Image (cartoon, rainbow, N blue to C red; front, side, top):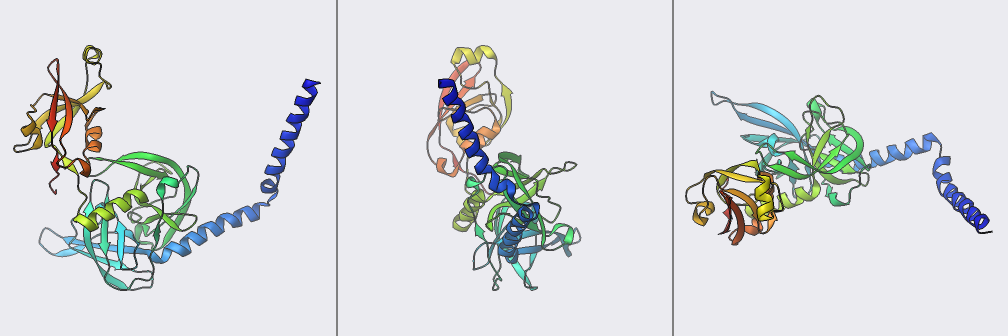
Amino acid sequence: MDGGVAFLLDDTQRLKAAERVAPAAALPDSELHDAYSRAVVGAVETVGPAVIHLGVYGRAKDGQEMPRGAGSGVIFTPDGFALTNSHVVHGSTRLEANLNDGRVVPAYLVGEDPDTDLALVRIHEPVPAWAELGESQALRVGQLVVAIGNPLGFEASVTAGVVSALGRSLRGQSGRLIDGVLQTDAALNPGNSGGPLVDSRGRVVGINTAVIRGAQGLCFAISSDMAKFVAGEILRHGKVRRSYIGLAGQNVRLPRRFVRHHNLAGESGVRIASIEPDSPARAAGLLTGDIIVAFEGAPVDGIDDLHRRLTAERIGVTSRLDVLRGTVLKTFRIAPSERPSS
């Protein structure tokens, strides 16, 4: 009897599951395709008018101004602020923005952050449209995304794909890791840099930044959440403020006996290679050869870990630094200062 009841319950559950699946499965391919197309078209119609083509000019060795490259950007405020990549505009002498309505107008660099490969530019002319910055933290792997830009000089080009992965780390041109990077298979090409990655509701969820050369479908975008933070910092301070302690180091593995003896949480650290004069590291009493193993109680497994700890919130705040000096574990108090502008 019990077995029969269980069997009937299983059948009932299977029937209910089949009913849930049937409506979607019953849709003809043409309707499914149309739904996909409508999503892409809607996203492009919403954000496309806010996408700009940036002409970048620089100085040649003889001092003459000449075209140096091009990229994309996206206007995100009604008064003409636009996001693009730092590597697109860095070192430029002049920027021109080709707007969606056909006008070519000057664009001005407000500030840039090479550590996240983001830059903020401003257009002082009336803009045809602006896009909404979405919440990239709400994205899911497999979600539809659309890349809009100007690859290889072809303006207003559109590619579509999915979010392939979230939370990737990408090495920026400054050498620091960019965290929270989005991976997508929406095709990107030179000239797409700085253009928006858009969700199906027409919200900008990323700023396209890089591809892996020689690979297919490995494209990356800086998240919109990071872009909001960087834009806010540049508008408030003219740059992204970070703390620093004034040293150069290298990643090293720790001898197992040291890890066991001192009950360390990590198995690697940062060996100090050099210390800047008049730096917080010098003032704290650190020496070349010391190995940093923890910052404020959190393990420091390498340079990237240390960079992540040195946020603007640490500026001027005395912090605990655990260091191996020879075989002895020492604790230092250090007050990071504001990182000088590069």
